[in-house]
Image 1 (cartoon, one colour):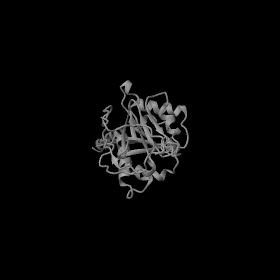
Image 2 (spheres, one colour):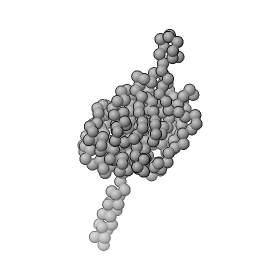
Image 3 (cartoon, one colour):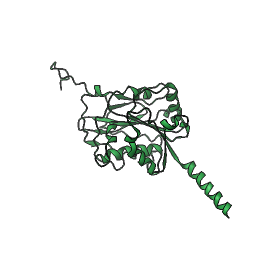
Image 4 (cartoon, one colour):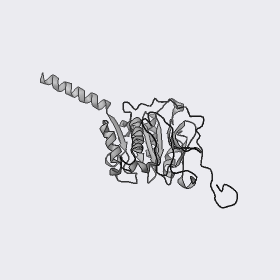
Length: 263
């Protein structure tokens, strides 16, 4: 009887481990200490996610992950790691790539790589002069935006989306400004894993009680990307873009009194 109980426990543990969801968080190529992201990491942990860190494990175990989270990059990834990331998505993994306001070359080096078709590009803050800092309206895109109301992001940059990439956005009454987008980079191959890009992510670092909706927005994206029950996003279910929604680079703004784009 004791042996049977032990065997049952082992089977239970094996079944749990088979269902366990794993996130690889790149805490090496990141501006900040790991503790900055503790609230979001705790949220993943509280939903039963096992979090792995590049600083502890490197990239060798990538194929066993469900999601990779890369945030606030401070250096380029090697060609070897970029190929690993592409194979990871091709085999069913999802990626969340956070881009704070600033130099976007590091993120674009991943997104624009010829090995896949994300068809997304981040417009640098220096070119986004006309973008308002406070956005008043929110376009819902379940489950990534479930229960999220008015949100203010700190200096969001602009994501332009082409084929296979679809924005969900904060916008003002003048024009639409995507601050998050999802891409299906291998949709032509019938593979519908995705890459989510989010800008304005400095707001994620603030305490939960001051930016509750920002925190919920970030949590929803992470929980959806790792595949938590109740946060399902159907692969290849391309969202319908509203007629009044558009993605475009900001209007040039050169207030030099020459009569051209002064306002």
